[in-house]
Length: 152
Length: 415
Image (cartoon, rainbow over all chains, first blue to last red; front, side, top):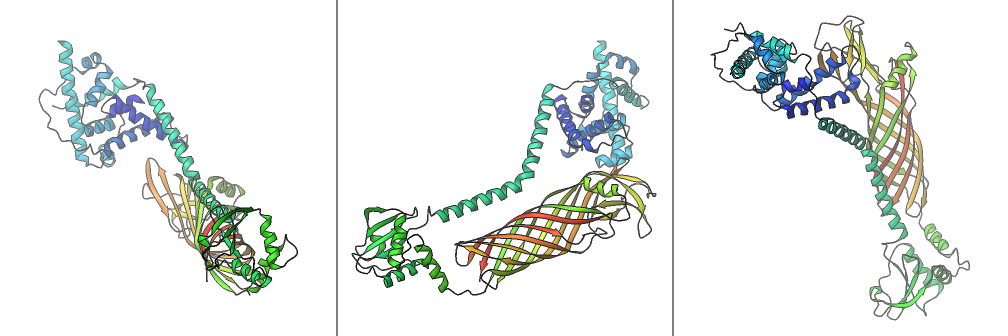
């Protein structure tokens, strides 16, 4: 579960805070688990909610940054994937602004639609789409940069 | 331009899928501490009312003990003189003291007996007519000296019962006058109920309700008026507002056909039932279920108790056991819960329960313990018990007869 929290957090310390809060809720509301689904899935949902609450409550959801549109293409993503360690990929996600990070995680890993994300984060559907696109662009650019560094 | 963008998603999904990181041991230590704190907070919250009541009671008892033992009570002075030690004068002196009056003027040179809180009597000399200026003598008399002195001055042969006889005489002189008193009180109560099967339901359903509901400490507050029409008999009535809290465990609720023909989820409780229509999802079909989280159920009643009290007085204390009935009117019934289905959640507040009677009759028994700290004012402690003679529900899955034990504390004004 720590890896779930790390994707949503800014760093490992914050991820551990989310993990602690998440497990606290798990123990507190364990009686609400009705054994109808996966227990791991239920815990994961709680962790995601804990993360959302942490960053939503701190009003971090207002970044609008200008993305440099150049050099956004990946010539061979699998190379980068094989050369980069997971920790490095996580670090890149963590370096995203909070709003981008949340939307990227909710869309890519949790499988939510833009309509659902917009409702969860109290933003418009268009903002969700735009932020996801920006997040992808930032990550892609960062991955290219990492690739260049590895190659040199 | 963006044809490679979705590829990022796959890179991340593939890379992170199955990857594990382990948190530092500090996380579990902090979590343990957080859970312990929660337990402690819950424990403190659970017993806070009982502790407050216990502390108030302890302070009150301490106050009474101090008053009765005379640790801080001012000494009572009995002026006597070697020349005027005659029966008539002695009786007059004792009467004054029995009514709590302190002699104001004493002739110079007369002796003054001072009864100390410890029961000892000091023999002092008065030099200029004021007791405050008396010069204490070294002679110290034992507690028995008081009785001997009383017997001597009152001319009563029985030395042991002399003081009592004098007090009785003083009491007999005061005829009883009927009076009124008002008591403002509040009490902490431990409420419960007796459930009976509602008739057209299975036994399991009523047992199920009993298992799901837990009473929390309740309270009662109000004012009582007493008319003491005889020395020992009085009738008491008043207005009491009581609130009962019940915690209800999570449960599945099922859709049924409501009396108005609509299909809605039925929420059952010991005090009545309600139909819940959440705003999310499709309209339910009969038999559909919904998860209801822990609920808080609050019941408020306004009661008019009428009791007959029998009063026994001992010094400043009086004890009045009482028995009577109470007429209870429903002031409010609320259930607050959260329903959840397929990821949708909604908080539901039920303000009107069906199957709840607006009135029930109760039996009341109490034991008023009063301490008169002045002629007009008294402290009152009132342990009591009440029991519903009629059910508080009608056409519900259960018939509910609430009962409660309480300990009230209050202030009484006599007029």
